[in-house]
Every structure is written in C-alpha cells, then in structure tokens.
Image 1 (cartoon, rainbow, N blue to C red):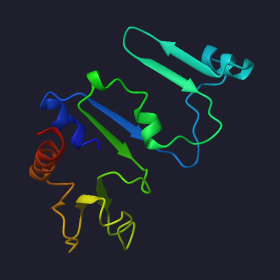
Image 2: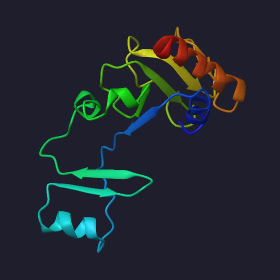
Image 3: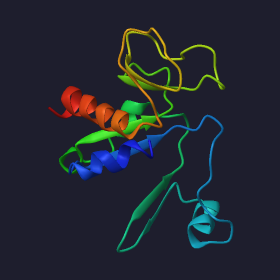
Length: 148
C-alpha cells in the first residue's frame, strides 16, 4: 500500500484507503476531548481542523465494506483501496510473502494480481514488491482495469 499510493497520487488520482481491523481499535487518546465526549455518551464524535477531519462512530454491528464506502463522496474520489476484507467479493491484489504463508488467502475469482517475493503459478499477473518497475506496472494494471 505504501509503495502503491505515491505512484497513484503522482498520476493525479484522488484515493481513499480503508483498513479492516478484526481486533478492534481505538484512535481516541484517553483524556482528550473526543475521548471524553464518547465516554460521556456521544454516538458520533467529529474532530475537525484546517488539515483533516475524523469521524468516530459507535456501531452495534460490524459494517460491510459497501456500507463504509457509501459514506464517501464519489465526486471527490477516483479509487478506493482496502486492506483486509478478505471475504468481501471485491477485486483483490493479494500480498503473498513466502515466510508468512504457504497459500493464497483470496478466492481465485476475486484475484486480479499478486504482489509476491516468490514465483507462483496462479493465473494472474505477479509483481515483486521490491522492484520499483513492478510497482509502476501494478499501478498501470490498476489504472487500466479501474480508472481507464
């Protein structure tokens, strides 16, 4: 993700990223105003400045990727890239590291590319994460497939 984003941004595209965390998370800092507002009972806490805005919303159930994407303004985005959401039926680039796993996690029908440190026979283009030309090639593929 960190290698893809600069190349995509260099081409002038507006990008959103969504990270799924199965363990839960907390971006509020104990003692800060937003933390105190949420602790006092606010269901949605917004913090805003000249540079950025963050919205923290309590939810009763985990939201699907489509429900999250509905919150974005499509007029201000060209591309949404997610990390996680392995079970969602969306096009996927899988990051496969030989030292981490022995098999791909994505369903074959969802996969359109693999970033990997080893040769694989999976029927989709492979890209080496350490080769800058491969990163450019992957962004070319994304551009052709989704932004063309």
